[in-house]
Structure formats: structure tokens, C-alpha cells
View 1 (cartoon, rainbow, N blue to C red):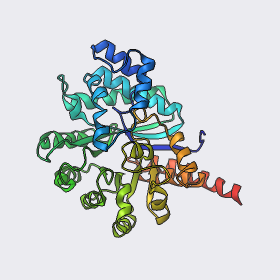
View 2: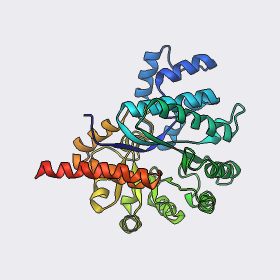
View 3: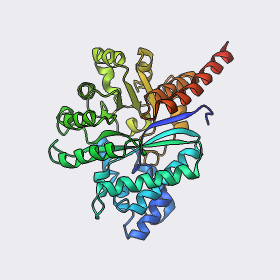
View 4: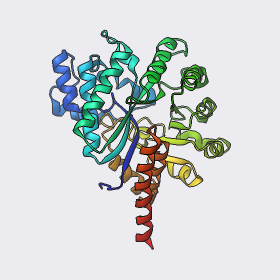
Length: 345
């Protein structure tokens, strides 16, 4: 079912959302061996391999798209195409995140990667008037907290330099559980020093202790975060601090950090008063879009259509766009809520 209210996507990875046709073309151009004989079989491969045994196994699936995104032209193209795809789906505002340090294998610097993505953003917005898009730069957890500390701090510095020029915030992504999340506090300490907003992956494959670490960093947004349900006191702390969770139901199930849509705690958290938003995480790798996620929310997770509008209002309020743009979107969503109320009455 296609929804007509303004849809907002806060948690979307660039490398997990490359069109299959583009991946196929780039592989042919670059001489990269693909796991299929033709494009149609490659599409089937993406769908068949969607379900993984863990978040860390899921992360291994990013190796192919990353191999294809090691030059500015490829990064520019996939960014532009993703914006056009979001626009075609009726998304009003989206935040696309990527890790510049993962695109330096063949000579690009992190700055080169950021500028290529921002150029793609510029081209995409020119083709798709009406949509708003900002870029989030991801620092990475790839091992001990020290192994790529220099690269992570460079990512934060770049976010500060391009803040307001298409970049809106930083994130910490990557493998959970290798070391305690609190070991990465240096990323968020530096972001605060530079005035860079931030979110943080937590509470997905690991338990609520990582949500506590993220809250201790001072974050008001958490990527995933659904396992906070396992700690009632922490739930109340997150609610009191006005924290917004970037929930990605299909991704959580594919990674087996939740067993099913029906068992997913998003609705229970929403009913507690948590600011829940619904997102796709990796649109192409997960074979999903926001309307499909919303269908799962209504048919299997217990949400109503009014709840969907409310969650998009939360997303507007938590977004990393300007206050003026936030309020424009929020006003439209409040009007949708009022119309929904009138129809019920």
C-alpha cells in the first residue's frame, strides 16, 4: 500500500542501497566477478541471501558493493540514483549515511569520497525537486577502538568542515560486540567539541548495555536500539531524555536480532512512550522500501495508520535538518494526524 503522507527515512546506508542494475554495470566496467551469470540471477541472489545468522554476517554482504564504490564517479552515481529512487517512492526527506574511510582502497581520500557523495546529492536534488536529503558520515567499529582511531577522527573533522553543506551529522556503525561500545567515546567527545550532531548504532545484536553507552555519549538518536526493551529502567531513561530510535524491522529480522515481525518490540516501545521511527536500513540488500515496512507494521506488528503518521512526525522532529525545514515537515504531518482524527470521529 502506498501512503500519501510525507514519509521520512532516517536510517539508510548508501552501500546497501545500490540498484542491482548499477551494481551489475559497475562490476562489468571494473572487471569485478559477480556471484551470478546475469542480471536477473543477480537480483535473485540479493533476495535469497537477505536472511543472515547475525548482524556481523549481514555486514559481510557489504563487501561487494564496497568493491564497486572505490572511485568518485561510482559514488556520485549511486548517490544520485538513490535520491531519485527515494523521490519516486514519495519520500519527503531522507538521510543517507556512508563511511568515507571504507572508500579509500584505490587511492581516494576520505575527503574525495565525501565530495563525490555531495556531488551526487547535488545532482539528485536537481533532478528531484521537492525531496530533502542530507548525508551522515559514519565512523566505524572494525576491531579494537584504537585500530582505526585516526580514520574515525578524520571522519568527524570532515563532518564539521562540510556541516550545513550537505553533511548533517556523524554516526558510528560497523560490527557490534568486538569491544565495549563505550571505548568509542572519543568519536562523540570530538563531535561535541566541533558542534557536530550525531547518532549511534546500538542495541541491535548486542543488548541494552550498548544503548546505555550511547545515552552516556549524549546521543538523542540511536540506530536500531530495540533491545532497550530488555531493561525497563533504561527504557524510562531513554523516554525521559527524548531519545528517538531508528527502528529497521526487516533488517532486524534478517539479521536475527529479532525473531519475527510479530515478536518485534517496536510497538511495545511505542506504547511505552518511546519516540519510534521506521526505516529500511539497506533498501536493496533487504529488498524493502518504506511502504513495505509500513505494511509489516500494520499487518504484523500492531501499529495503526495513525501510528505511522505519528512515527513520521517523530522522525521529522529528530531529523538533522534545519529547524525551519523540520517545522515545515512537522506541520504537514500534524495536519495529516488531524485529518486522520476527523475521519475516525
